[in-house]
Length: 105
Image 1 (cartoon, helix red, strand yellow):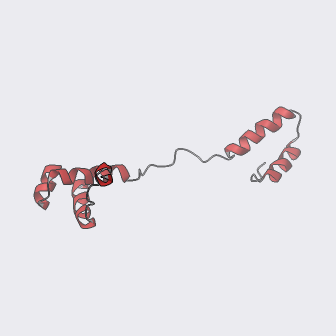
Image 2: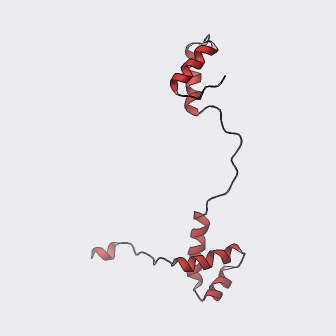
Image 3: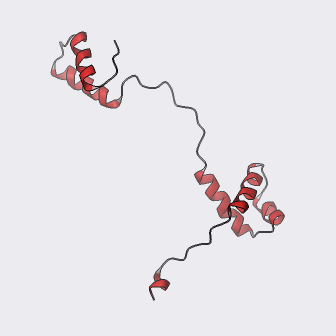
């Protein structure tokens, strides 16, 4: 009885089949042509390609220059200056070194 209540799992596709379908899709071949060439149903090709599209990591360049201060350091900077607006640069740098932030002038 408990077996009937469990969700049915779909059969996992073989690695060889995936390795033949994905390159054909990348080359621009359609679902129907792939299924006909490999003699596999179109309903088998579709989920493999959809999974490939969702799992493929995006290869995008980094957005801009990396930040000089981490968010934690930036928040500490604001806190320190709000507490004591007349803090000198050397006092400020020493507090940053104690906090573990990289030393920058």
